[in-house]
Amino acid sequence: MARTEAVFPHDGIHPIDIVEAVAAHHDWDFDRLADDQIAMTIQGQWRSYSLTLAWSAQEAVLRLICSFELDPPADRLPLIYETLNLANDQVWDGGFAFWSRQRLMVWRYGLVLAGDAVASTEQVDRMIANALISSERFYPSFQLVAWGNTGPAAALDIAMGEAYGRA
Image (cartoon, rainbow, N blue to C red; front, side, top):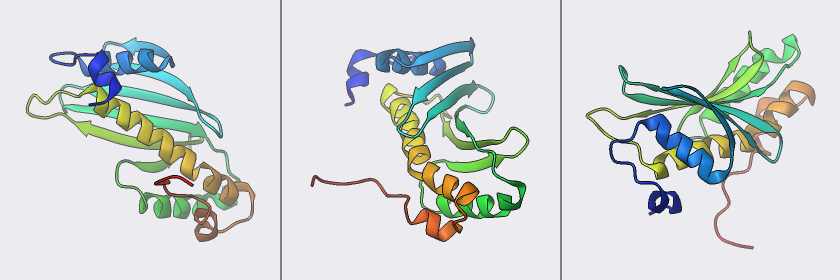
């Protein structure tokens, strides 16, 4: 059981209420935009990430979007798309997309809660953590491709996987 599980009971609570409780527990800046949506900013090693979580009762999905600005030169866009496809092949949950109009790299994930399933604080905590881990992991690769004159495969060589054990 995660530490947040012991602190926040989750039976019958709206999914965004659970997200708000997790954000408060971690002392993250957040803003409840509506009953079904919350936005927050979380500082990573490389930069601050903007996260938005929204609940769709009709779809029974808690959607997470983690974004950061990326404004590569137009001639590098095909390589950015190739890089994000290669990065997506290395992750199990969620995936990257580049929203060219907004100049944003986004990590998207949807937690399906069909059949009256209830999100736990541990699930919400983990989905936020995984978004940040993936964004931090691949951020240097996207930067190298955009501005470092590095090809996608070479740039992904620096994207380290999760470390296990201790040195």
